[in-house]
Amino acid sequence: MAATVLDGVRSVTVTLTFDGVAFDEYKDGLLYVNDVDNQGDVYGISGNDGQGLEGTVTISLHTPLRTALTTSSQVSLVRNRYQGVRITETVANERTLGASPVAVAASEYFWAQVGGPAVILQDGAWDENKDLVPSDQVRGAAMVASSASQGAETRLTDVTYADRLVRSNVVPSTAVTNTIGYAIDPRADTEHGLVHLSLDV
Image (cartoon, rainbow, N blue to C red; front, side, top):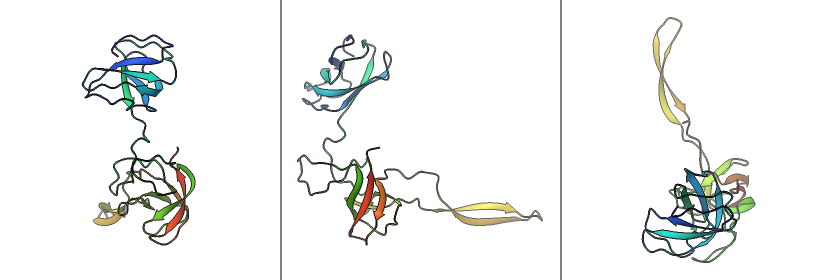
Protein backbone atom coordinates (compact mmCIF):
# COMPACT_ATOMS: atom_id res chain seq x y z
CA MET A 1 0.00 0.00 0.00
CA ALA A 2 1.25 3.46 -0.83
CA ALA A 3 -0.34 4.98 2.27
CA THR A 4 -2.31 3.97 5.35
CA VAL A 5 -6.06 3.82 4.63
CA LEU A 6 -8.70 3.99 7.35
CA ASP A 7 -11.67 1.66 7.52
CA GLY A 8 -14.85 3.03 5.92
CA VAL A 9 -12.96 4.54 2.96
CA ARG A 10 -13.93 3.54 -0.60
CA SER A 11 -10.63 4.13 -2.40
CA VAL A 12 -7.05 3.00 -1.85
CA THR A 13 -3.74 3.96 -3.43
CA VAL A 14 -1.65 0.95 -4.40
CA THR A 15 2.06 0.87 -5.25
CA LEU A 16 2.54 -1.13 -8.45
CA THR A 17 5.28 -3.72 -8.81
CA PHE A 18 4.73 -3.97 -12.58
CA ASP A 19 4.30 -1.65 -15.56
CA GLY A 20 1.37 0.72 -15.44
CA VAL A 21 -2.33 0.08 -15.90
CA ALA A 22 -4.93 1.64 -18.18
CA PHE A 23 -7.88 3.68 -16.93
CA ASP A 24 -10.55 1.29 -15.54
CA GLU A 25 -8.49 -1.79 -16.48
CA TYR A 26 -9.54 -3.40 -13.18
CA LYS A 27 -13.17 -2.20 -13.21
CA ASP A 28 -15.48 -4.94 -11.87
CA GLY A 29 -12.43 -6.96 -10.85
CA LEU A 30 -11.21 -7.73 -7.34
CA LEU A 31 -8.73 -6.33 -4.84
CA TYR A 32 -7.72 -8.67 -2.06
CA VAL A 33 -5.29 -8.37 0.83
CA ASN A 34 -2.88 -11.27 0.39
CA ASP A 35 -0.28 -10.66 3.12
CA VAL A 36 0.70 -8.81 6.30
CA ASP A 37 -1.95 -6.51 7.86
CA ASN A 38 -5.61 -7.57 7.41
CA GLN A 39 -4.89 -10.36 4.94
CA GLY A 40 -7.94 -12.26 3.76
CA ASP A 41 -10.21 -9.31 2.94
CA VAL A 42 -11.57 -9.05 -0.63
CA TYR A 43 -13.36 -6.11 -2.30
CA GLY A 44 -15.05 -5.48 -5.65
CA ILE A 45 -13.41 -2.75 -7.75
CA SER A 46 -15.62 -0.03 -9.23
CA GLY A 47 -12.78 1.59 -11.20
CA ASN A 48 -9.20 2.82 -11.24
CA ASP A 49 -7.20 5.74 -12.56
CA GLY A 50 -4.51 5.24 -15.20
CA GLN A 51 -0.77 4.93 -14.61
CA GLY A 52 1.68 4.63 -17.47
CA LEU A 53 4.74 3.49 -15.51
CA GLU A 54 5.56 1.75 -12.28
CA GLY A 55 4.26 3.92 -9.49
CA THR A 56 0.92 4.23 -7.73
CA VAL A 57 -2.64 3.74 -8.90
CA THR A 58 -5.85 4.70 -7.11
CA ILE A 59 -8.44 1.94 -6.89
CA SER A 60 -12.11 2.77 -6.19
CA LEU A 61 -14.09 0.09 -4.34
CA HIS A 62 -17.78 -0.87 -4.46
CA THR A 63 -17.92 -1.14 -0.67
CA PRO A 64 -15.99 0.63 2.10
CA LEU A 65 -12.98 -1.02 3.73
CA ARG A 66 -13.98 -3.18 6.68
CA THR A 67 -10.60 -2.77 8.34
CA ALA A 68 -7.83 -0.22 7.99
CA LEU A 69 -4.86 -0.99 5.74
CA THR A 70 -1.29 0.07 6.45
CA THR A 71 1.74 0.66 4.25
CA SER A 72 2.77 -2.91 5.18
CA SER A 73 -0.46 -4.39 3.77
CA GLN A 74 0.09 -6.29 0.53
CA VAL A 75 -2.77 -6.37 -1.95
CA SER A 76 -3.32 -8.03 -5.31
CA LEU A 77 -5.46 -6.81 -8.20
CA VAL A 78 -7.44 -9.25 -10.35
CA ARG A 79 -9.12 -8.19 -13.59
CA ASN A 80 -12.76 -9.07 -14.27
CA ARG A 81 -12.48 -12.61 -15.63
CA TYR A 82 -15.22 -11.93 -18.19
CA GLN A 83 -13.27 -9.06 -19.75
CA GLY A 84 -11.71 -9.90 -23.12
CA VAL A 85 -13.06 -13.44 -23.46
CA ARG A 86 -12.50 -15.51 -26.61
CA ILE A 87 -13.40 -18.87 -28.09
CA THR A 88 -11.79 -21.71 -26.16
CA GLU A 89 -8.43 -22.79 -27.58
CA THR A 90 -7.90 -26.43 -28.57
CA VAL A 91 -4.93 -26.52 -26.20
CA ALA A 92 -6.70 -25.38 -23.07
CA ASN A 93 -4.54 -23.17 -20.88
CA GLU A 94 -7.37 -21.31 -19.21
CA ARG A 95 -10.80 -21.95 -17.76
CA THR A 96 -13.95 -22.00 -19.86
CA LEU A 97 -16.17 -19.17 -18.62
CA GLY A 98 -19.43 -19.72 -20.46
CA ALA A 99 -21.25 -20.61 -23.66
CA SER A 100 -22.66 -18.14 -26.15
CA PRO A 101 -26.11 -19.15 -27.44
CA VAL A 102 -25.67 -16.90 -30.52
CA ALA A 103 -22.81 -15.80 -32.76
CA VAL A 104 -20.95 -12.81 -31.31
CA ALA A 105 -18.81 -10.31 -33.21
CA ALA A 106 -15.36 -9.49 -31.82
CA SER A 107 -15.26 -6.77 -29.13
CA GLU A 108 -19.03 -6.90 -28.56
CA TYR A 109 -20.91 -7.48 -25.32
CA PHE A 110 -22.87 -10.73 -25.00
CA TRP A 111 -24.61 -12.96 -22.50
CA ALA A 112 -22.52 -15.98 -21.50
CA GLN A 113 -24.53 -18.90 -20.19
CA VAL A 114 -22.81 -20.56 -17.23
CA GLY A 115 -25.39 -23.02 -15.94
CA GLY A 116 -28.30 -25.18 -17.02
CA PRO A 117 -29.23 -26.72 -20.40
CA ALA A 118 -27.24 -25.37 -23.38
CA VAL A 119 -26.73 -26.50 -26.96
CA ILE A 120 -23.01 -27.14 -27.64
CA LEU A 121 -21.11 -28.34 -30.72
CA GLN A 122 -20.27 -32.03 -30.25
CA ASP A 123 -16.77 -33.36 -30.95
CA GLY A 124 -16.67 -37.15 -31.04
CA ALA A 125 -19.05 -39.51 -29.27
CA TRP A 126 -20.71 -38.40 -26.04
CA ASP A 127 -22.34 -40.60 -23.42
CA GLU A 128 -25.42 -39.46 -21.55
CA ASN A 129 -24.63 -38.05 -18.08
CA LYS A 130 -20.85 -38.17 -18.68
CA ASP A 131 -18.65 -35.14 -18.00
CA LEU A 132 -17.54 -32.96 -20.90
CA VAL A 133 -14.50 -30.73 -21.40
CA PRO A 134 -13.51 -28.27 -24.15
CA SER A 135 -12.45 -30.12 -27.30
CA ASP A 136 -8.74 -30.47 -28.00
CA GLN A 137 -9.50 -30.64 -31.75
CA VAL A 138 -12.36 -28.21 -32.53
CA ARG A 139 -12.53 -24.68 -31.11
CA GLY A 140 -15.82 -23.99 -29.36
CA ALA A 141 -16.82 -27.67 -29.19
CA ALA A 142 -16.96 -30.13 -26.29
CA MET A 143 -15.73 -33.71 -25.97
CA VAL A 144 -15.98 -36.44 -23.34
CA ALA A 145 -13.72 -35.93 -20.33
CA SER A 146 -11.44 -38.93 -19.95
CA SER A 147 -8.11 -39.90 -18.52
CA ALA A 148 -6.07 -41.96 -20.96
CA SER A 149 -4.90 -45.24 -19.51
CA GLN A 150 -1.18 -45.91 -19.36
CA GLY A 151 0.72 -49.18 -19.37
CA ALA A 152 2.43 -50.19 -16.15
CA GLU A 153 4.54 -53.19 -15.16
CA THR A 154 4.15 -54.91 -11.81
CA ARG A 155 6.25 -57.75 -10.39
CA LEU A 156 4.10 -60.39 -8.67
CA THR A 157 5.24 -63.33 -6.58
CA ASP A 158 3.10 -66.49 -6.60
CA VAL A 159 2.74 -69.12 -3.87
CA THR A 160 5.90 -70.89 -5.06
CA TYR A 161 7.79 -67.60 -4.70
CA ALA A 162 8.31 -67.39 -8.46
CA ASP A 163 8.41 -63.82 -9.72
CA ARG A 164 6.34 -62.87 -12.74
CA LEU A 165 6.24 -59.57 -14.57
CA VAL A 166 2.66 -58.49 -15.31
CA ARG A 167 1.81 -55.62 -17.66
CA SER A 168 -1.56 -53.90 -17.18
CA ASN A 169 -3.33 -50.64 -17.94
CA VAL A 170 -3.79 -48.09 -15.18
CA VAL A 171 -5.54 -44.74 -15.11
CA PRO A 172 -3.35 -41.87 -13.91
CA SER A 173 -4.36 -40.30 -10.61
CA THR A 174 -4.46 -36.85 -12.17
CA ALA A 175 -8.05 -35.60 -12.04
CA VAL A 176 -9.79 -34.28 -15.14
CA THR A 177 -9.94 -30.50 -14.95
CA ASN A 178 -11.93 -27.80 -16.73
CA THR A 179 -15.15 -29.80 -17.03
CA ILE A 180 -17.93 -27.65 -18.46
CA GLY A 181 -20.84 -29.89 -17.44
CA TYR A 182 -22.34 -33.19 -18.55
CA ALA A 183 -24.17 -34.49 -21.62
CA ILE A 184 -27.98 -34.52 -21.34
CA ASP A 185 -28.82 -35.57 -24.90
CA PRO A 186 -25.84 -36.68 -27.01
CA ARG A 187 -26.05 -36.39 -30.81
CA ALA A 188 -23.65 -37.41 -33.56
CA ASP A 189 -20.13 -36.04 -34.04
CA THR A 190 -20.19 -32.48 -35.54
CA GLU A 191 -23.85 -32.00 -34.56
CA HIS A 192 -25.02 -29.96 -31.57
CA GLY A 193 -25.94 -31.81 -28.39
CA LEU A 194 -27.67 -30.74 -25.19
CA VAL A 195 -25.36 -30.15 -22.22
CA HIS A 196 -26.08 -29.25 -18.62
CA LEU A 197 -23.50 -26.52 -17.99
CA SER A 198 -21.98 -26.21 -14.50
CA LEU A 199 -19.55 -23.32 -14.96
CA ASP A 200 -21.08 -21.10 -12.26
CA VAL A 201 -19.77 -23.26 -9.42
